[in-house]
Length: 291
Length: 170
Image (cartoon, rainbow over all chains, first blue to last red):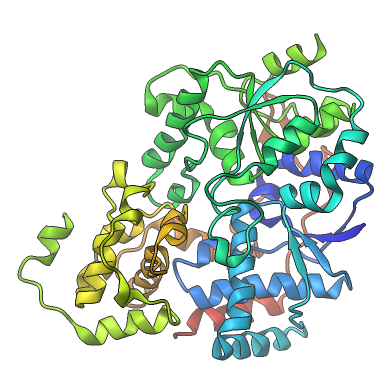
């Protein structure tokens, strides 16, 4: 399968391990990625300033995808996926805004196409490729590894918009983890938010939210946390030390992207998966896998 | 200042209320019956004292001007649990976004992070700049040395059209 890919800002600027592991693992599952002609924002931070302009940016991403001639667009970021989905919703439900957005796009010789299907890492692997295909590709089953998934918020809510999993009891990421031979645990804080949206306005509160979740997970003695959104990765992995300072506890929770874990199970070299970029202590987890 | 303090002696402004309703594109705000499902699941309740059911009620009563100038509308973590769980589809999240947009229009105080993101998008197309990254072993790396493709900025025409979109009012 061939699909266009839209990375958003956070992955391209900061969460390079996610990008590297996607680029390494997807071809092994017969998924070919085609980058859009330019790297732009999906509109997420603009929503709070001007909702119309955010929808314009979201629709613009779809218009750029339309240029590739492909009917599938892969969006690995939860926030981008949500913003683009809301833009699609606006284009179909709000005639006035839809017309204005089409006119603006025309000024750049871009054309919106409602027929583009937007995918996220979770549903592209779980629903489109399928668990069997993932299972079959595994070379190094991750037996004995116990991890906790963090699905994030905007990829499962709100359901009316068409999201990738159940809003209150998401299970697909756990199933994908189990397909690699690892164990995925259930825990009371599973649906708690990473707080990343508050980094624009209330940094301490944002870090406190992420830190509280990590603290709860640490008490459960898991081998690590698995994420599939760059904002969640930024909060739980990159900023883990800062979250520890805020909640006043030493935190040692290995955090990695699902695609990095997948890459390990597929037998791909650690450096190619960007595992040296993770800031959380993932060496424990890597040692357990290779033991 | 707490919401109760803000509302003391305030009078409803039905014109401002209409402005918010117009932005909600048919979401049935008026049907909120204060079941408090939104507030009981709110991510920002514990740390930042956001009570979404109060926001919806206050907008319904017409206390929009007070809300638009209050810090409380900037405490939402956009986890969307309130949208999901509202039995009347009143969607406090969308009310909060509408209030934020109105606050911007009225040139009220807006958290700098958002304004920075917008000016960054105008400049480069992306909301944050690509930077060098330090690995766990303290080596400095960038996209190029990791073998990742170059980030392509949008064409020049983008800036002018984006500015036009930013001037659009509902």
